[in-house]
Length: 314
Image (cartoon, rainbow, N blue to C red):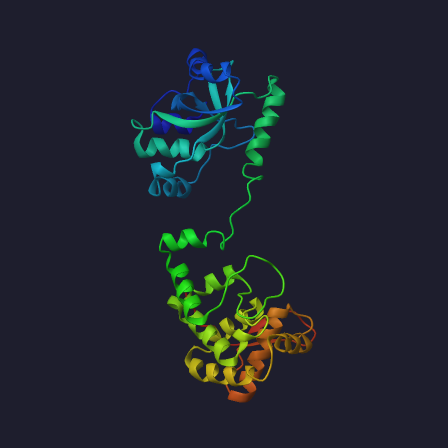
């Protein structure tokens, strides 16, 4: 029996063979494999051989504080006819949280029941453990770009900033990997995260440089490498941004994004190409603008050393 449920709900965690069979009879007679059925909370159970009933207060508080009945998905469970109980393989936290939210209102919970589990107890245990361990494995996670339209509708601030930048600078999104044509973002998610920094000012800094230097008209002009380089410069030189921006626009007009990448990799061959590009541009700034070196890498090393503390921007 689940002690957490009994303590929180004040109800006895007991089975009822007749009740469970009665609730499911119509679906079993119709040969349903699965059915969503309201199940009394005291009939629910977990098997501690493959999952734990321990949940941190933080996890439970999150579920309770963000409780929304309209978004409450059915729990998933396997009936144990011989006990009159339903063993949950997904939704234990929601079961316990429901009793903290309103134990009277949530005397029943919607459960997606798997009505044809293995009859043998050991086979059923493995069946449940597999469902628990690999839940959502066959469901592809939505990417940030797939959620874009929804986040616009929900008025997400970073997504709204990105949309405004798209209108202002004329770039496009793509979910495909590989080289990018002119005016196509290298990474939607990277750019979206940049839009969360400094209320969008970091993104404005970056796109102003790209447009001023003509990178917006060149292949891979908005590549992940270019975005990282310019974001690093925004963070490393907060007191000199206007000067750095003007300088980089002038210098980048004379090269292409691919040449920038090649120069960085040639100077720092042991590093990831994005970091190599970033250090190469930092070296340009230090040499030509006389600003302080912020980072360095020892010769033939991959270890990055911060010389001065980067400004914390969020």
